Length: 345
Image 1 (tube, rainbow, N blue to C red):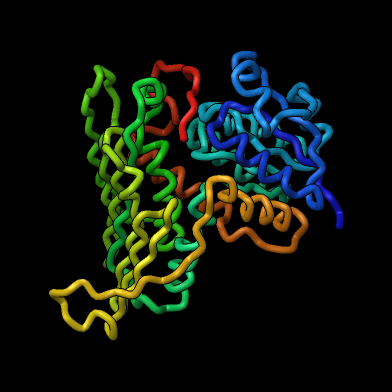
Image 2: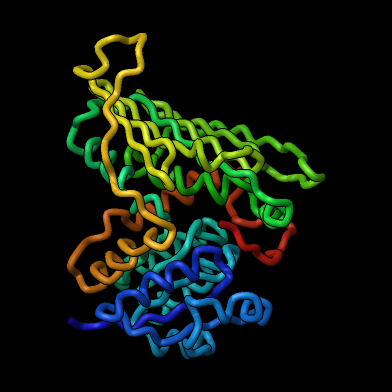
């Protein structure tokens, strides 16, 4: 089997090491060239973690030159900048999320990649959640009928250090976590006709940013809601993706660890005042398995064995609507520069 020479730019993204570990599990697919990191603080903090142990550290220029494809895993503010350098050099990229820079920067990156026929795979991990995949399959098969609503939640209770990091982003926690849910909603329903955001500041611990947020997406016949919070106790346990249609509904709650998926249709839910549903068994991915399918697909996209269903146009639309919700056209708040990122589970 032909191998792809794979390198990594940046180790500052919180999901970056897990991607490298997933790639290193597949020596039949990838020959790891090394990694680049221009910030010595990140090298000191993460350079000896298992994902990078034994790898050669290179300059950005060298790792691009020596690789066929790159994992772009720097801190969020710089993702689009480094990804564009890879595309300009004719390389395929897996790029962590959400995209950064201005909307014009994102458009330029995706247009260049499409023109060069280079793969762009964004690292939205819920695309590979088995329950999410099964729910989308049922939507596409028409089993839910016409979609009338989606309710999506993704929250947690972040520590003050991480919340301080979030203050630099336009839209705060909506920009970071809301993007995951928006990615799925737009894949199912397309671009909304209108968005109405509610961006609240709790001010917990004296840290002022958008940490308690709701966005309503309006379609011709459907409504979709995104709720994300950085100050929700046990928020991880109520992360949810609920899709309702005229023939049935699917509810994923929690989304992961453990994943629980419930299905109802008009044959099951015969009494509208009772909770009637069927639990659908789905694989429960551990944290160490979260990105295995993603990296295998990255290989297949590059080799032409599969076509990425999340198109360049889709990725642009997600970023466009995300910026509409967050009230700007750039990842960073005006006048801010990126502050150091922090570890998060």
